[in-house]
Image (cartoon, rainbow, N blue to C red; front, side, top):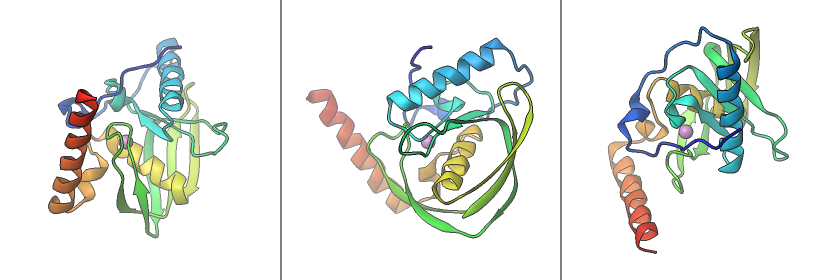
Length: 169
Ligand code: NI
C-alpha cells in the first residue's frame, strides 16, 4: 500500500467528471487499499478517487470513531433520498476549512464492491452526508459550491491566508 498525494482546491483536476469502472481487477483493489490508507493517514472520513487524481467512480468512507467501518463504493448511484440536514463539512482537498451544507438526511445508494458485486447501502445522518459529499467529487463538484458567493469568497480567502502562513512558517 502507499499514500497517494491529495489534490487541493483550486486544482482544476478536482473539476474532472469521473468515468465508470468496468474492470474489477487487481489495480482497482490496489487503488481502494491506497485510498483507505491515504484517508486514514490524513484523518479523513471520506475520500473520492478524484481527489487522488484518478478519475474513476470510486469512493471510500469510514465515519466510525474506531476507524474500523471501511466502506468502499464503486459506481455509486443514488436510488432515493429524502429529508434534509445541515452538517458542518470539511474536505481533505480544503485543509482546515469547514462550512455548513444542507443535504438529504437519508440516502439509498446502489453501488458495486471492489469485486463487482452489487450492493445497496442505506445511510442517514453523517454517513449520508459523507456519501453525498464524495459522490459530488466524482462529478467534479466540491462542497463550497453550495455556499453563497459571499460566504465562499470569505472562506477561500481564509484558506489562502492559512496557506501563505504555512509557507512562511
Ligand atoms: Ni471532499
